[in-house]
Length: 584
Image (cartoon, rainbow, N blue to C red; front, side, top):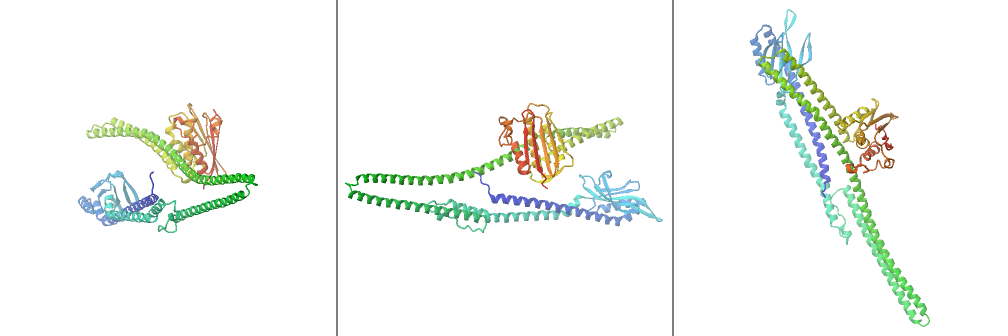
């Protein structure tokens, strides 16, 4: 039998939580360092604007392209500047140096106003270039009037940011690793000294138990403070004391029996002497006394046998009681593991079917993307060969729109299915209480079961007001309706083509009432009372476990603190009424 160390399990959980927390904090610190450095670079670009705007403005106004190019080359020499655009008043490029993206892909966001013109902050929507920067107008003043003569765009990149914060990132990561290693060492040492080593010493002392000398088998102090281990040691020593006292009482009882036997022997001798003196006159009396003696000896023997039998019976009862307690504990653990396994098996089946369902829209999306790529390749070849016609361009636009529309529709379909399944799956593996919109949540549950429902002609009708919200265990509600719907599909609608499931929901005085009903084959009266019993199933030969309705009852009564009732008659379907209160 494999033994799981308690100290190792506790250590693993504590260190796992610390590792996750350290990872999140380090990531947040790196993100903050990145944002601060980027803001600092933007501030430097704003400062650089004030330095160069005057000279560039006059160079552009005087159409001095060479001076503008020289200024741009001087700017590109700055390590933080990766690209420079200089345009005239008609947005015609005068100078373009360094890493530059497509101007049409730049997203401008105004950050300050200067009269009628504005200075703008610039974001580049390009994951490949990773550019960002600052753009500002060139304003020339003449005779009290201002004229916009051009625009300058200064670009930096994420490479500059990472170069500046590289040392800080290494320091943060190294600091986190050192703290984590130190914590692992300290926790391991503490767990070993406070739990593992005392338990091992206590186990070794218990293994050396001597039935002939229980007093010498008491647990000696193993060096731990007043804690649970000390309580366990005291309880074990108290049990040894009880055993010693029991042996003493048994020895006293044996001595009393021996003493009684001695007294009886003396009495027999006296009787024999008396009989010898009165042989002639008391022969009849002697015979009676001998008979009484035999009766006393027989009663004495029976008493001894009764005492021995009672001792064996008492020992057997104690052992049987201990074995019964152990069996009950193991049975409860096995039942709990079986219930959890049934839940996870249901979730695993649902996961496999959702994955299969998602493959269809993803496959269509891949085909559409490939077709669109081929269209773009043909268009590119036509442009290079200068054989592009208006008809070919129109055909390309029509086909591209169709492909994109097909691609978007299928990706949206896959996204909706995954979102529904994700919410339901997370709730089923969590005991978290949260605020639930019942109508929307029932839609998510039904959507997650779409792979099972689409292969049938059965329908689900939900009558629930859109504004009902309640605090409850979302995972319990999801598991309840998943089991009920699957039971209806497997058992209720057996040999049926068009089954209907109706779910009615109402909120009355802070108590939610849910009525689940199908028009399936129903349950015979003799089976209705056994519907919630564990392992009761009519599909044992088909792999049924008989735990579905039992899990539903446990979730309603134990997790939701509610009630559930079932009613049915054979051929008229099955109905459940579930009620529970708001947990807020």
